[in-house]
Amino acid sequence: MGRKKLEIKRIENKSSRQVPFSKRRNGLIEKARQLSVLCDASVALLVVSASGKLYSFSSGDNLVKILDRYGKQHDDDLKALDRQSKALDCGSHHELLELVESKLEESNVDNVSVGSLVQLEEHLENALSVTRARKTELMLKLVENLKEKMEKSNLVRAEADNMDVSPGQIS
Image 1 (cartoon, rainbow, N blue to C red):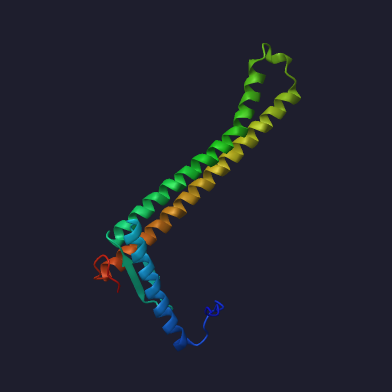
Image 2: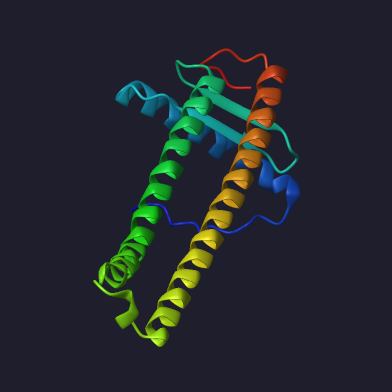
């Protein structure tokens, strides 16, 4: 006969909360260590208690090195997503460019109606405004991401400087 499954919910009593936190934190650190040993993986674990105390674990590599590698990988992922979104945007813009090209390649521009030219101009202005808006949006996201990364990097470096933990130990 197995144990009854506990319902996972917040423990309201502050002093009663400390024992499960400590046990689960130690269990989590043990699992991280096992993952590191069994799979030869670089593992970094940060746990911040409700009181604000920082507990960390790193396997093999220095915690800061692991987090720097994560940051670089995250940057590469963001760049790949940006390229994909640009490729999707280019599809509709490519069709518009083909339309403009076909209108301009007509042998006699005088045969093109004023209404057709006005409509073409409106399409071009719309495409240009959409492109400018998208460019602005991407630039703002990039600036925001860079600010967040700088803040995280500064925070991690400050925490790492404050800790005297060698790799594989917990604080």
